Length: 215
Image 1 (tube, rainbow, N blue to C red):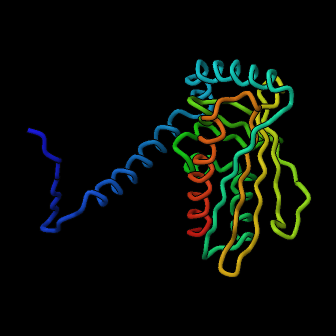
Image 2 (image 1 turned 120 degrees about the vertical axis):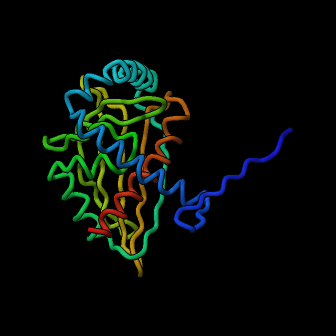
Image 3 (image 1 turned 180 degrees about the horizontal axis):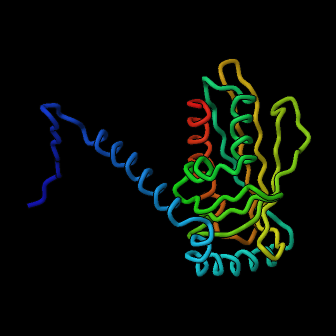
């Protein structure tokens, strides 16, 4: 017999829909993941993920060499109300300058390491199908009337091979702000890298916007 599954949840006389249980699960999953990341620490995380980051180094270096400087671009755009660009940027850049690992790692479940205490941000996060270790150097990019604040970034492997470029653009709206997030990968990289990072951007910046709004 094939029938659809239905589950009824009742707690203290109140019936809760499946969406409520999933929301509870997501909240607890975030708490569990945060605890594990804190307990591991940076050194153990690097060690634990070395097989993955070594494989990623090899793949990204080969795609960069095959691309000969040519890049493929992907863009994610966000619109938020209730917070302006200055408020968000003050919070976000403040977290980077303070080396606030809790805030930086919480934005995305596939943020494994974010060390922003040096001139570059050391990052381990999923790019494509697995964790990648790279170093991101932010630099200002001249603005325009559409997006007055433009923050560029160049990501390299430990040996200096350039593997990505980002451009984060911010502009106020009458009731909030707009954010345009651009990433460029080597042209020879598979489709999963740019398309996956579009969703990666959407996840991390939405979570950062919520955290900045709540601060």
